[in-house]
Image (cartoon, rainbow, N blue to C red; front, side, top):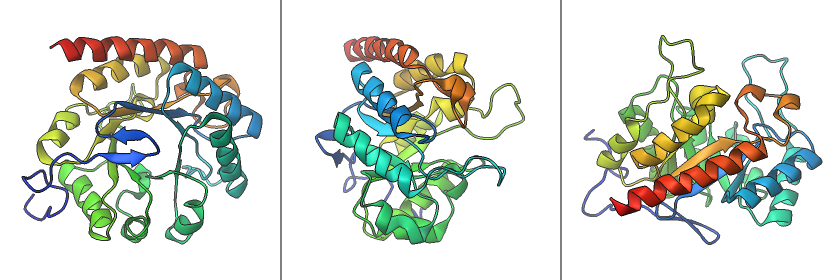
Length: 270
């Protein structure tokens, strides 16, 4: 990994801490949670209130949805961004949403706090360069077929444009296994810690795609040393317009958050 001039861990590049409001990503343990997609104002705000009540730190929600089928729900676009903005005003939670097109970066930044680059766009180099020119932190998800070196080189694109605030996010890779949606690679967490100063989050919702596996893999991610989690939560998953099988109910999320704190307390005693 000789070409990693900005992302490599070194004496001049120690652990990065990213400020989002009063949240210190890379120093505080941070949980980003919320619905897969922004579907309505009521659904989003009710979910946001539940996320905050359970101890979540930031709200996620897709206003633009890259879908395998062109006929599937694609998100509410600008209307969705305005709903997220209102949810932030209601709860005080900073907002994370995905950006799909380099032409949209500047105006999406008017509504949100953290830009997400999804797995499908990890190597969309024009998009990486554009978010690198923004002043917003970037949550960069690992591509489903990507190696650690390829992933870090994509982070390098963002940093080389002047934006130092990159959060890596493991969301599962594509393997021959079919039982789970993806194979959640938790070995990547300590590997990232060995090679880069950037914080690393884990998304067990997309990483497994199975409701029963989200809690154990979340706790395992905490134990592996992740700096945070990205979890899908919906006020009524059965009626969700996308990914209904991997979204926790508010009650499930509250239970998970209590267990996360117990694991973190045990780690602090080691």
